[in-house]
Amino acid sequence: MLIGLISDTHIPKKAKKIPRKVFEIFKNADRVIHAGDLVELKVIKELEKIAPVLAVYGNMDPPRVRNKLPKLNSLRIYKWRIGVIHDAGIFGTEKMKNIAKKNRFNVLVFGHTHRNTIKRVRGILFVNPGSPTNPLPPFIIKPTVGLLKITKRKIEPFILEV
Image (cartoon, rainbow, N blue to C red; front, side, top):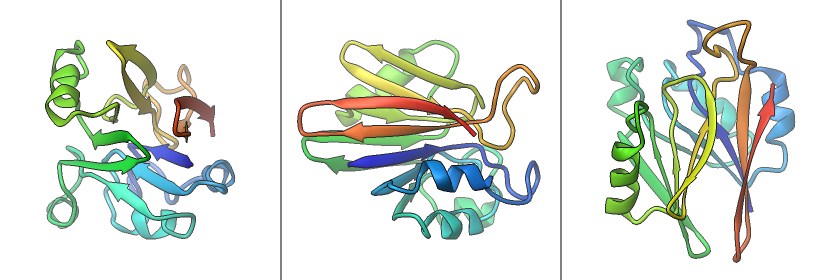
């Protein structure tokens, strides 16, 4: 299974649409996970042209988005439990570890910082795909998305520039 990871698209505030390169990177994805700050629900409709989308709302999402999406979401692929939340407690890993442990997640996908991250802590994989439209700080960090390659035996995370 291949899962596309995306967050912090901020459409139409920071970009008019999802960059074309995202569709190229995700072309073989079986699922897409969006970790919040979509701003417009049309982002999900666009991503659904690739594969089914699992999404959560972020702190910049207006009520029309917040009312349609949960704060925390998850799915199971093979034996793996994958969770997604927008703000997982970016300053330190204690909140992230608690969310993952409480929900028995093997992977926690998060956003909010606009900076890509891959980190393993006590057997739990934490992945922030960054932002394909608004990396912070600009001109230093490149726009990125992520991929999870999942087999019955392992999960391999990847970060790719857009």
